[in-house]
Image (cartoon, rainbow, N blue to C red):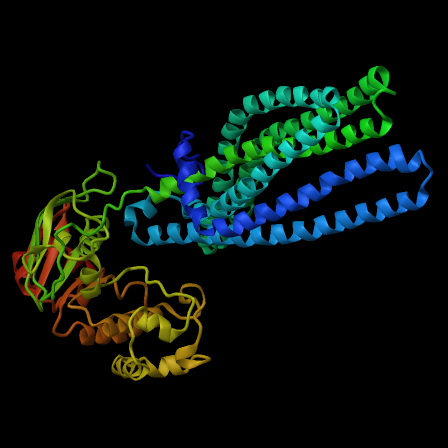
Length: 584
């Protein structure tokens, strides 16, 4: 399924298993969360003493006109509030540390998974949506869960404490708040699944916006070249309108929860004073009625948070569903149980290889091809015939639908992936350079001394070009090496391959989109880097591969013609026609 910015993602079902899986990320930091929880209880208990002190001040100190005692009690209550604030700060700090760590662990797990997912996963999904799952969702999930676990449990304890204090103070008046709470909780439980469904829609609309922004940034040059700025802004406005409209519905449910809690709070206060003063006073003192009112206010705060926490958990479940959907994505390209480490010599064979990207249209249809170790082979053919696909299969970015690919007589599925890719280097049509130094881009993950790097760059005649950059080998490249020319970027990529010293070298249109002078320089570099190693080259210009040991013309998704340049020219077949058309 291809998923772009226009298409909402498929709906997922709520599962409590996702909640339990999330707890596995939280377990390592249970100590921090427990400390936060324990400090929160102390803070809450301190505040629960205040209504009792207020009741004593009204019923005893005020009645006895002991104003010094009232002042003293006021200072004690102020001290309790300040102490509670201090404990609350410590509690929040501990919680923030824990949720940051949890968020990082989820991001690290997602990032690790992304490193090994097959190319097809990235081909069929918007990168903006993948980015959202890898960055925004972990932050949201970690924040919700850590706060819900600590603050939710804390509020449950607070609620129990408040109910106990209320019942101790006056059972009859306490029942007013308790019965009202049961009614309100029932309403909240009914609304929670509705909110979850609405939140799913919001998540999809947010992902669509992120996907479109990501696509627009990648295509900014085309946008500016074709004066498409206004159209892009219109599309973004439409996507944002969809997001805002979806968000409004979610806000409505959220505000309904908040509004109902406050309405019930006001109704309870009114009932406490009305019933208390009408039916219980003076048998129940004014101070006791005021204390019950104070506890009732404290009663609704944790209750509101507990119910909103349930809604937040429903929201978090929508993020978790997307996160675990990614983490559970099957690793189609992975090591087999019998995978081995092989010192590759370079013999390659494709046996009846069939491949399609979408399982419908065949890009390769029973291709059979043999390449001897050390040979240089050129692949030619019309656009879309499957040349680059063969290269991707050899690097095992994809696996064939049928048939097998052998290296030194062993199926590449049985060669350890890192071992295979460590000895098979590919230079794609679209080279990529990281936003790091030239040196870092050349060595990548290998420990190669700078002297060796300079030696290779001198052999390839690019040392002077590098030294003319602002900081030589330590020059930080811009996004994908945009501060270099196409030719310079390709030369750096050739140097990078030469430093990797692969047994099999794959070059996909290495001389495309450059001028003839630069092509000659790159061709010379390629001649150096391909010496004494199996090389497969895809070329648009046949002139760049005419000296290969063998040339394979791909047509109708099969290897249509094979032979040396001279042999194929003598046949006067498809290769002859293609070469002649370029020679004109």
